[in-house]
Image (cartoon, rainbow, N blue to C red; front, side, top):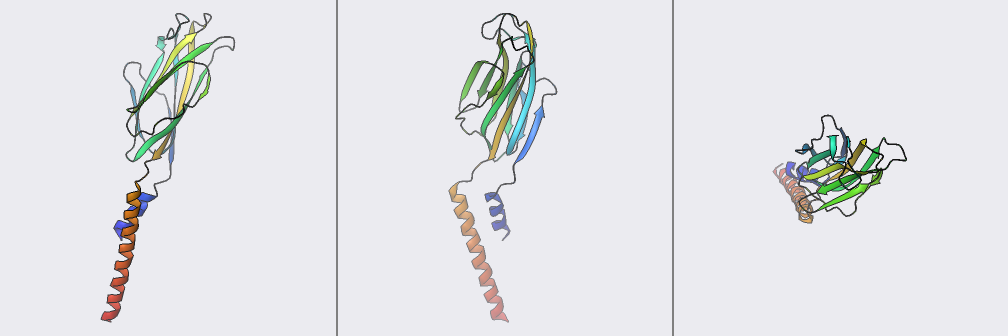
Length: 194
């Protein structure tokens, strides 16, 4: 009976958790900051960039004190990344134009966006993945009137329990039927002994 109970628990995963992770020590430029493993649920990771712009071409703002954050995110056993979205903001005057870059890479796919202005973004069609992913936020381009900048980013990761194959559900159902039949047989034998 205990085995049946364990199988039933595996069919109904624990309730989803959520966590907010704020950049404390810089998500280093050189080597990725390791984050995770994240459990099933919605997780928000946020940080900030600051740097200097030397021109108005792509990647001309990758200079200064902290122009890039690199994160490697892993997921708990039995979970997978289902999707993500991210937000960008900066403290520059509205007349100034500053753009950021975002890179996502997993064992299955990778993509890079450049020239992103402040706002919310949700890349479509991310392949669910169980292995660690890498996220990179960068200072990108700016108008000539922007010499230095401070910008913020946050990314929301939707992590879900990995669906069990259909065969496991059938196996659990079969074991439950077997346990019920065995219990009935044991009761019948007990009555015959009396």
